[in-house]
Amino acid sequence: MPRNALVLAEGREKSVKRRHPWIFAGAVHHLKGKPKAGDTVEIYSHDGQWLARAAYSPASQIRARVWTFDEKEKVDADFFARRIHAADERRQPMVQREGLTGYRVVAAESDGLPGITIDRYDNVLVCQLLSIGADIWRDAIVAALKARFPGCTIHERSDVAVRRKEELEPLVQTLAGELPQKVAIEENGIKLWVDLIQGHKTGYYLDQRDNRAAVLPYVEGKEVLNCFSYTGGFGAYALKGGAKHVTQVDVSGPALELARENLLLNGLDESRCDFVQEDVFALLRRYATEGRQFDVIVLDPPKFVDSKANLNSAARGYKDINLQAMKLLRPGGILLTFSCSGLMEMSFFQKIVADAALDAGRDAWIQRFLSQSADHPVNVHYPEGLYLKGLVVQVD
Image 1 (tube, rainbow, N blue to C red):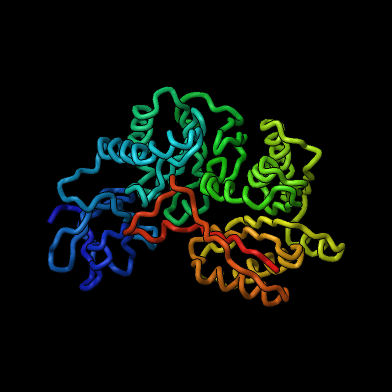
Image 2: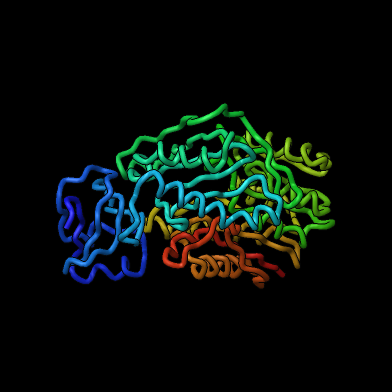
């Protein structure tokens, strides 16, 4: 047995043998050697069988994140080059077919690179390194990106609180090239500005690309309310699809200003759109009091669930906004409603929407189930990779 290793308790090797990439603290029987945080360690079963090679994280409940299940595969600079190359190659048919200039290059565990997210916005690559194992391989990751995407700017947006679980501070830095304030990407014939400095996540919600297009069959000649609009992607699609009028709602003034710029970027009629800077929960109630009605409502709220402990309180939040939205829909109206919380399972989310319809006194039918776009794949051994879920609901 090598110098640094984690030996699992008896019976706790089953998930690793099924190629799940997380090893929790409770599964570890003992540690051999004195690895430092981020070091590569070997994973063994209680009876000495080699299982995997992983990044060690003594501060996290996820005690190790698996790099490889192949005993012959070394974890070195070439490893990261191979994995990034393979991830991008898997996406290229979709990128070429759809003419995308913005897409997710690496989706962390789903691409065999735990804790590493990389998005491409035109000629800018934005990375998030959220685990200690990813953090210590930063130089190798940057070198691999330079080789795969020569001439691209590489920017790091590891400004996420989850890093603290691995005793890492949030970090923002440009690693190669010059970073512009914003870039424009194109998807489905729509151009969208991405704020690379102040934007959410790595700059934009690429995972909603297919769902933004899903609004198109329902909006021609309709009045649309786009809640939690951010920079107005759903609203721009709705206007492109012939919506009579769109109301974009968000608490962020700068986001709404960029939403306005997105309309101009696409040559869309700004007079057919209102921009409302207000809390969505309060606004939905005010609209109900005023008797406002809409034909189509989009609910794309931020993540409500941070842990299993607040799942029930998050469920109340989801129910509230869906209940209030259903009250505002005209008979036959369409609700596109989403949850990006990984701990919120689709079956539970569907029940919440059903309860909201019941309390609103409305009957409703699910017309479509929606999920994240194809550049956010779900590895079959890592079901946690499926986090975004949505419903297209017709309300009587």
